[in-house]
Amino acid sequence: MRPKAFDPDDIIDAAMKVFWQRGYSATSIQDLEEGTELGRSSIYNAFGSKHELYERSLRRYQELKAEKIAVLSGPGPVRERIRRLLMDVVDEELSEEKGLGCMTASAALELASHDPSIAAIVAQNLNDLESALYEALSRARETGEIAADRDIRALSRFILNTVQGMRVLSKGYLGHDRRQLLQDVVDVAIKVL
Amino acid sequence: MRPKAFDPDDIIDAAMKVFWQRGYSATSIQDLEEGTELGRSSIYNAFGSKHELYERSLRRYQELKAEKIAVLSGPGPVRERIRRLLMDVVDEELSEEKGLGCMTASAALELASHDPSIAAIVAQNLNDLESALYEALSRARETGEIAADRDIRALSRFILNTVQGMRVLSKGYLGHDRRQLLQDVVDVAIKVL
DNA sequence: ATGATTCTGTAACGTTCGTTACAAAACTCT
DNA sequence: AGAGTTTTGTAACGAACGTTACAGAATCAT
Image (cartoon, rainbow over all chains, first blue to last red; front, side, top):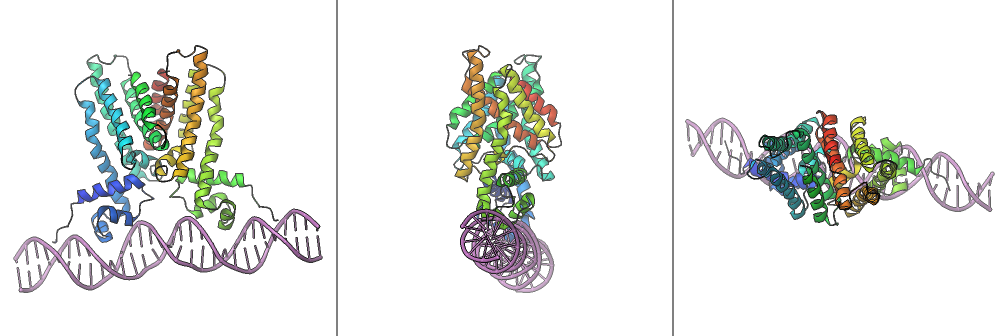
């Protein structure tokens, strides 16, 4: 048994970046060869197909996001934690060398309605954040930080919605003053909590 | 001079639906032939290229949206008008036969970062709604309906952001209870006004 | 070292892609 | 009616697509 000359996880990370940047349809096998520095044979041998590699990339994308989401279960006032999460999105959108945006959002719009297996991953990725928000807000309600009569589920969905909206606006308002725009959105959204 | 056997506007409407449903990359000329019931020759003769036809489709998409945006300049309390706008998005997302979503949002995520001419149209489409919101809120502030110290610009951007977020969540949460989800988002977002 | 097994590079597969060439058909105008 | 012009259908273009076949290289176990 000859061992692979690469670590599959590294390849998925590399492939993820390519898909992340270009989307699914617009990414060719050749793009993936260049991005992963692997031959087509190795790619197909290890991952089966472009589609399977994309699925794993989309799952991997969410794994990498876990640490950003982790801020929600950290210390400090919940409003501050959520604000930090939102500002993280702002910084991410503005600092990217190539404006990658959010891979989950892109997958949702490009593929979810035509591709059930992708739709399932997208829904799970979204739900990860929604659940983390729900958890954080729920604990904050128990401590009295959030009023007992607030609808925690609605609030977490609202914040999730705000994040995804920022993902669209950031890509859609290229060339404009996106920092101020997103800052405005964050400021208003936080106020509702 | 032989006249065209079709009305170009009708063709753009038909092409728009195809692009709207499938995105740019995943739409082939053959798809457009079928959707428009035209031969390739006529398509290329009339519109030059797939890309140009997409540009015109994306502009046309916004034209059709003008009437939905018009509710903002109608009568009644501004919160009610904005709520109606948001609920219109909910109904649109849920009632579509094929879950079309928002073409502007799709264009933003799929193309804007790699295609300046598309990015310009996307930005203009987004700005159309932002401006209409700003206008409505601005008038509401003059009448005292909205407190004088509110940041109208930030609020209009926030509502725009909410709309685009709903576009993503609606496509990303297929198979879930999207009606309740979007309703929750609308309820929370309106409260901020 | 040898055999068994797996990975990798090369080449090609058949399809589909967006686009163009061209001739015949169709219409307006004089 | 006939000249002039534009549209349309057919066919094909070269390029790129995702995928596969296959032989040789590389590594493990013995």
